[in-house]
Length: 220
Image (cartoon, rainbow, N blue to C red; front, side):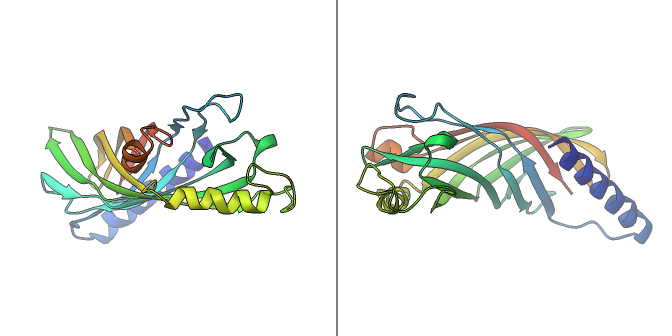
């Protein structure tokens, strides 16, 4: 992770120098990258599933317009998880007990309110999100292995069904960032957010899948 951050910082620094040399005019949108390790809330007992795991999303998006007090910031985040089926619910699994490897994408479209300070800006964001998850039979697991629903193959189908049924895909996000002006067209700083599983709270009365994250936000 440190190497990735160093490489990205170098890319941003070099691109900033290029823009200054080329005298590229001020743009109205910022390219946004976020690195936000997150706690994935799992209220189920650790006797039948994994404790609430930490995941490592990487997010890409843009802020438009970047000069306005009110803007929008569509972002797409990606990370991977392991799941198993328990009582017809998709719950996080430790690697030795997993049934599915889950590709997880969070499409977030928040409204951003910015407060401009002398050398920084404080941002608050809130808005809807779609949590798109696709479970695949995990490596080393056979489709005929035993599972909660009968076999591992049928468990994976049930896991994917749970992801998309009863609005388990519908989330609402709230968060904040404090970005410092490092260069004329480069800002970075800490960011925190909470992704709330609205569908799960309404249907299941459970915070299963809530994400609480703290990380770094970079705007270019």
